[in-house]
Amino acid sequence: MTGYNSNGEVATSNGNGHSNGHSNGHKTADYTAQENATYPYEVIQEIADFITKGSGMRPKIGIICGSGLGSLAEIIQDPKIFEYEKIPNFPVSTVEGHAGKLVIGTLEGATVMAMQGRFHFYEGYPLAKCSMPVRVMKLCGVEYLFATNAAGGINPRYAVGDIMLMHDHVNMLGFAGNSPLQGPNDPRFGPRFPALVNSYNKELINKAIEIGKTMGIESNVHVGVYSCLGGPNYETIAELKALRMMGVDAVGMSTVHEVITARHCDMKVFAFSLITNKCATEYSDKKDEEANHEEVMAVAKNRQKACCELVARLVREIHSNAAS
Ligand SMILES: O=P(O)(O)O[C@@H]1C[C@H](O)[C@@H](CO)O1
Image (cartoon, rainbow, N blue to C red; front, side, top):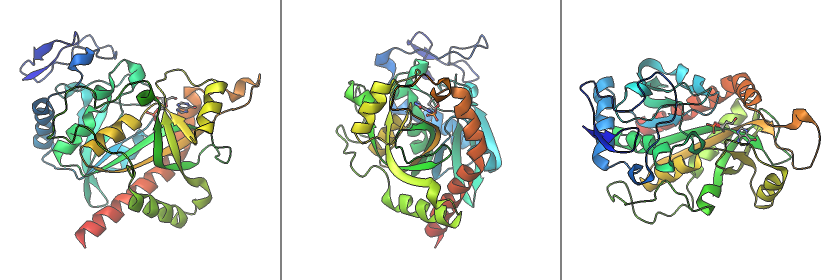
């Protein structure tokens, strides 16, 4: 099978389907040359076949779990679990709070696949590689992408633990000339120049607002604009001020390239940020106002129940509407 080895060269996998180039047990990013970052359709198809044949399932909804939100995948029943390391040509997760497992099974009657662990630009992966699993989902049969993330709240009205339903984004990596769609375009995935207005499905946002009301958390649910920066460093005060002036409500290091890839191949997208920290937009010497990953993980753990419930109820809505 054709793939890429850790030097970015075209490689042929061995008998057990491994060609990830990380056999020494270290979880380090599998560096791939930029020119090889766009996976050919056939390679994506092989990965999708590996998953659908291995699980005997064709999921309709794909879920990407954000930092510390891997428990979203633990509510899936009768799961078939694939470790990323065992999936041919799949990258590996290198970040704490991203387990590196693909979980396929049933949630509220629907067949879903969830990524417990996503790939970030700061891990050393090109954007096309970060969002390649979205194309795998598409060829597995996924029609709806749910993407979740941990983010810093810039909107002063947001509190730690709130949920922001994404209705738009500002693609800062795109401003810098980076896109997951760079390189040759394969029209079997989508058009060369996709439009991104209305990327976030309004019907799903409205349903999620209603679900928030029935959960009694309506005052903790917002609708806002997310921006992705490259990371891994958190933002400076000047950057946060600039983002706020641009209309950004929450900032993180993911999701946008996944959404672009999903919209390119015509998936319906629902995404939300869990606000894990408030971003200071004024200068201060207070150490406790500095963002840190431990706090992000701790807040995510505290709020995982509400996040799981929101996801499960929205999946139920989609499934019951499709069945009726
Ligand atoms: O994968 P997400 O976007 O949820 O993770 C956020 C961004 C960084 O990876 C990390 C920073 O604490 O959390």
